[in-house]
Length: 237
Image (cartoon, rainbow, N blue to C red; front, side, top):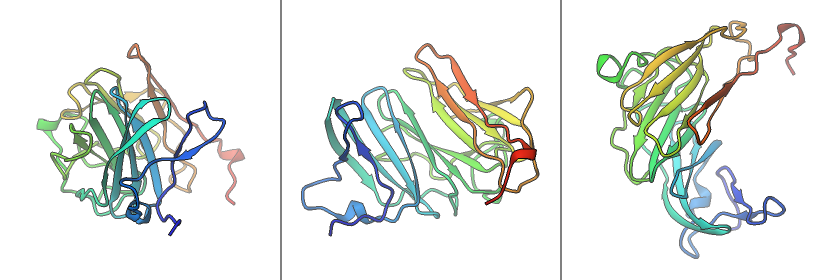
């Protein structure tokens, strides 16, 4: 039908000068363009696999490709529904490393999702919060646990996975002025939490707070940033 209903994604094989559609499965199959999607995120792992999650508010679709070189991209897999435990998803994130180790961070938007794993067995960084982490080790074909592990007191978050490593990170606000660093040394199975000095300016809602950004360099150095809003210059449109 030449129409789409999910988020759009393209690739460039000439360093950004022009863009092409990503392949969406076998020739003549149009169904993957017609899964409803609202907000998406993309990640790559260390083996050249590319992952895309797209929220439909109650769940996500999950798509994957493999890149063998410049412009050499093949479609791998698509899940119309991932069937994760949380009933809502306000903003999805995905990060990945190694060969097929994928981590989906789902945002309930509040702390009402109580079925996720948390507590001593999952680390001091787990507990009631907005974001829940789900893990796949086969490129998203299967997800070992559809309940996930919840990050304690997490508000807006952004994840990152260290290349060629078992370290996974998240940098999160808590909707109240604190910034936390969440660290897993074993591919998302156990989480520690550390408070970032200084925090951020919290207005108690009002739409000014946003999510941090996070990046892990090849040498393992972790960089995080947060846009601290200036109350005097913030305006609602």
